[in-house]
Every structure is written in structure tokens, then in C-alpha cells.
Length: 200
Figure 1 (tube, rainbow, N blue to C red):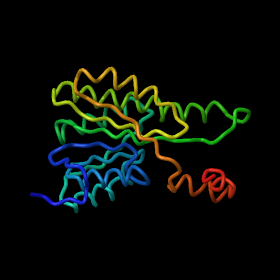
Figure 2: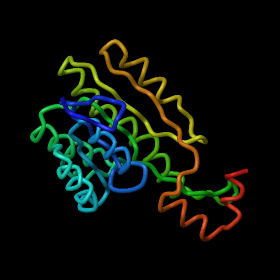
Figure 3: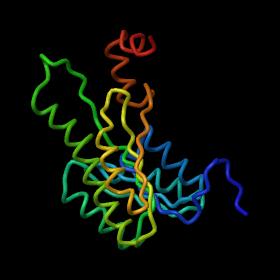
Figure 4: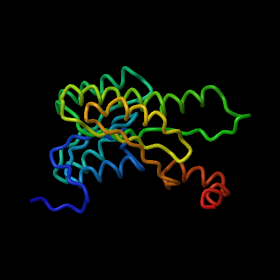
């Protein structure tokens, strides 16, 4: 019997974490590995996910680093094709990759809007589609978790949950509050009032 500090038992499960090279995604990837899962870690650059994958392999789990730009359909296809070759299946998807460009309405520009919508909405849907297609074909069910934000709309998570429930695939959203990741630290550095406002 394997002893684990995790409250979850995921021995034999294969997981993929988007945006897993740092911050929340990195912590999720390690938690999944601690629970016994093999974990594929993705990032937009690919090579910066390798140290996380190596650390997971050092824990005795299988892990691969994948290049994945969630805003680009061809990148999603290539990443999942590699996952098919390496692991021949997927049980858990954590849609963690996302971005934010803090702007008020008056100063919002089209490029910033597109970057956020493409990563946080389009990316979530099409990565979920790629994962769910494989889960449905395998007829083993599956789990999809979308890392949202307290400000984000979780309607897409509800729609995916209803659509995939007949296939034994659950879809949930987790919405953490302010976490001190690299982007939030930079914003706190450039705008000292930001931290106080969020804590209030």
C-alpha cells in the first residue's frame, strides 16, 4: 500500500495540467502526483514545463512536458496527439492556463480583450473538447476541473458539465481568490494599493 500525504487516491490515473510550469498550475501538478497520478505538464514555451515534469518523475510518477498554446487549435491538436502516443488516454484534465489584462472599460483595447477571451474561454472549451473526446471514446468516465476566478463567469463549466454528464465525465470549476503568483506579485509591485484593495 502506497502512503500518501494527499487526501485523494489517484493511483493509475493520467492527468494533464495546462499552464503547469508555475504558480497554481505547478502546485496542482505536484498535488496530483502526490496523490498517485501520472501528470502531463503544459506551457506555452514547453521547455519551462520540463523542470516540473522532472520533479514529478523524481517522485516516482510518469510525467511529460508538452508545448501547448491553448489559444491555438493546431497546438491543442499536436499536444493531444503526443499525449495519445505517450499515454494512450487521459483521465483528468485541469484547465489552469489563463491570462488577465487588468484594464477598465475606457482603456480596454481589442488585442487585450482577444488575448483574455482566447485563453480563458476559447482555450478552456477546446482543450476540454480534446480531453472529453478521448474520455468518451475510452468509456471510462473522467474528470475536468476548470480553474476560474472570483471575477470569471462559470457558465461554460455548467454547459460542459451538462453536456458530458451522460458519459460519466464530471466538470467543475475552482475559483481561488488572490494568490501570490508571478503576475499578481508584479501587479502588487507596480500598484501598491492593489494588495490592500484585494485584502479589503
